[in-house]
Image 1 (cartoon, helix red, strand yellow):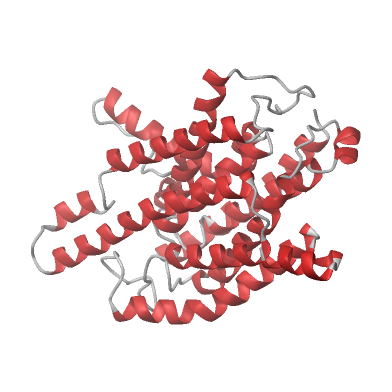
Image 2: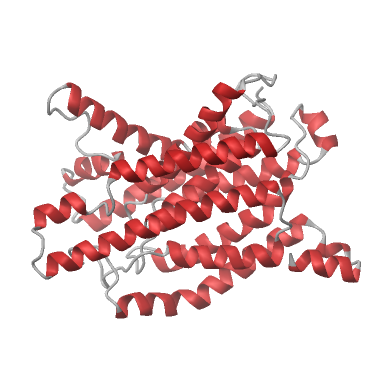
Length: 376
């Protein structure tokens, strides 16, 4: 909004450029987060705001949630750099509602830990309640919000019209509304849960989120240009480039978060961060008609979500047997690596898994761009 005001009153084209706005949003969000995080972490530590039972693997016990500060930084940066249209507003609505649900869940975790310390609940009960609010209620809310957002987006955003891009296929098949809307809602809800499941170790969800956002940013920038779309045989999506400064704001915030969350972490993303960012990324893939590419570019998140889904289903069908040693699947790898003699503690194991997930995410970003832009 500020950049738009400056352009209108100065006529300087630089303030109109989406690339300039995106660059400034990334830098501003990063430095704002670098300034605010120490004060925020200190405040949370002062009020003992965490849900961890032990701090044996950390030099300093990490606090939570970072997601509340994420929301402040991303909204403030957006107000300065973004030109609001239906794409930006839809993404921010999803982000805010999911963030509020996540914040309630984070608060419930902290309250339950304090009740445990006061002897009001047993440790077994705490473990059962450690997810905060009821998982069924939380999932129902995610689905309802995703469905409502899908219906509104389908009705009021002109370019969300049922046509999608499909890997290895150069056409744009049409999904009727009765199929497209549930698929859109499912994409948003699965991504929200997938990022939440993935946010288990220090930095684990951060790099996959950044690679997904980079994919969306590249495709949105290309899809907004009619000439490039004709050359690359892509659907032209006018005005979708307005999400670029929002993407920059999120990436800048996540980079600052990496600074403080590099192992050993000092602050945890929490549901208010993971769920909200997952939902936002999900609807952004819908904007660029690429939600069928999410299982490729966001494979890490889909793998985590699918592992939990399969584990629960198999456990019920087999009457108590487990498909994985533990779900989400990063815990399966963690238990396997504990059997290796050269990993002396869980801290080394978690760091190794996180870095390997990061490398896979970067490779999948490249693969996704190649498939979307050329192999169709």
